[in-house]
Image (cartoon, rainbow, N blue to C red; front, top):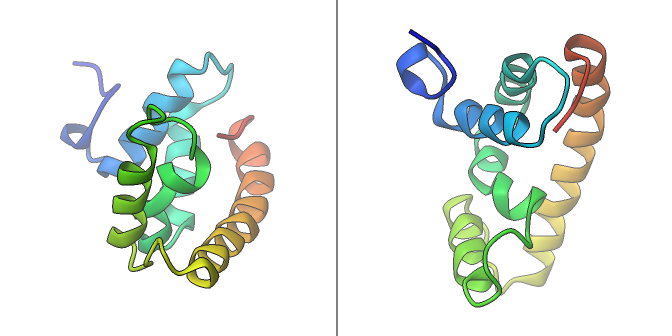
Length: 111
């Protein structure tokens, strides 16, 4: 059995999402290591909002506001509150900067 995807292999949904993105990007690095590093290193509210913070342009243009707004609300941020959005984006940027350095060293790559 392959543990390529999902919680069946003990991964959180977040880690499975990160590993899937890593694998689909064609990186030549340890994607499960990257997924575990981010899963262990990010607080829950940043994991919840991760797609909106990391890939804000990924949803189709017509769906972008609804999808990203929903993810931000799930993380406890009102998407209409510009200061709250700036704050979570800054926290994400700072956390990811530190985690990316650590992840590159441990796993040979980053997301």
